Length: 179
Image (tube, rainbow, N blue to C red; front, side, top):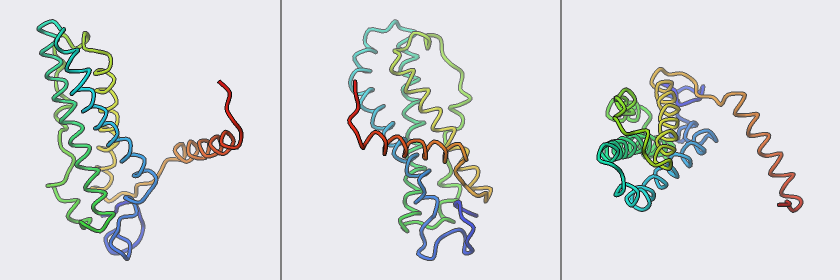
């Protein structure tokens, strides 16, 4: 099985590290996923808790349910990202990481029925839910590719976006910006 490379030896580099775990795609996904975990925790422990107190009963139930689904989804994302990081750092083998024990869980959350009152949830929670569903779907695709032994490569669109970001960072970094 391959973690995005074409070398022999089970996809690992000679030093036992995963090329995928060291890739820009992984690094960006890792930062995004972990930042989203922190953002959700901060929201749920602070403003979200305060907002939930003022919700009607049906919406409060939806809030509790959706916040648990959000937390579960993000914990699955974080666990998967940490496993990939462990492989990259040589703390775990790819074959261990590909065992069912470390497969991305929580797929049933995507099929769960929406509750009455979800349309009245605070906008900040709804945004966190959408963002968590998006990153979960991306990681689900990566996990499926790895388990199928497929190469994980950045799309040409991703490469173009990175070149454009680099261009603008260089261009904007060389002179002050106006507001």
